[in-house]
Amino acid sequence: MGKYIVKRLFWMIPVILGVTVLIFTIMFFVPGDPVAIMLGSNASPDEIAQARELLGLNKSYLERLLNYVSGVVFRFDLGTSYQYGTQVTADLLERFPRTVMLALCSMLIAVAFGIPLGVTAATHQDSLSDRVSMLIAMFGVSIPAFWLAQMLVLLFSLKLGWLPSYGIGGIKYYILPAISNSFAGLAGIARQTRSSVLECIRADYVTTAKAKGLSGRKVLMGHILPNSLIPIVTYAGSRFSMMLGGAIVIENVFSIPGVGTYMVQAINYRDYGAVQGSVIFCAISFSIIMLLVDLIYAYIDPRIKAQYEGKRRRKKDNG
Image 1: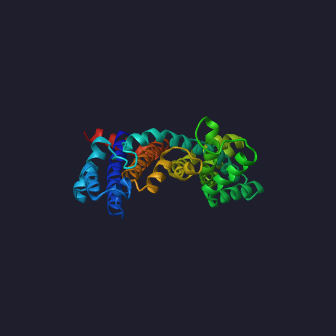
Image 2: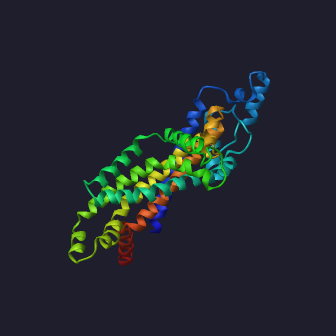
Image 3: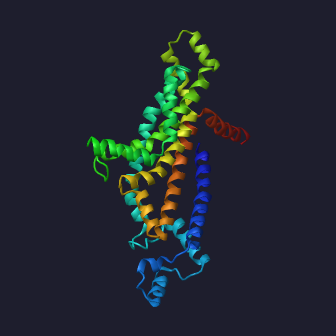
């Protein structure tokens, strides 16, 4: 298993380097001078030239790229915000817990409601429960998160006054954003669960368990669900990454000061340093999440365990 983890860690390196080079190149060739935007229209050419030299923007593309990549790799330095004059890494680390909190709450709602919905649909195939469950899933996939967020604000904040519509505070501030961000994931998990459970229901070992006289509940909990987990975990992990990215939109709707709000403000002010740092930070976060998903996948999938244990056993035998 250790080699499996090391292999996955090495795969993260070219991905992060590729994202770093790509986003730096895009931002380098984007029209507009960030120094002129930062200093305003009244700045003289000498002031602009002095600021460009101070920020290192007067160097060639290759020099700036090498300096930036080395800073990211060796010091985790994502650059400086032109707008605030602060370190992008510090700004993102301060805001990241709020974004993670929103994504975790969204994932909890999606799993808590999506899996039972999918199991109900599978165990009552072609019944009214199945059709209603899949109708909910279809709506979840079709409805845009930002539109759902605005409708929830209109109903629960403006009309009923039950929940706050913006800002951060206690857990109640995350309820509407988490529901908005989770609906598509809930629908996807329900559909994936239904498909996986239906596949397991038709398996021979389930027929054998029923023939032994086990109750439907014991067959479901002891045989069907454990063997349905692998595709569900894989989908849920990729969905969590999408929820983390979807928080960019939801945070702006609810004015949550997270990574998403920071990135959108950086784009609006053409704060190129903050934009490229935010993209790289998100790429690193997504890579770590997918690594954790792979580790969970390897833990629950006996085939991967057997593969690496078999290799280790053969090496011992050959040695």
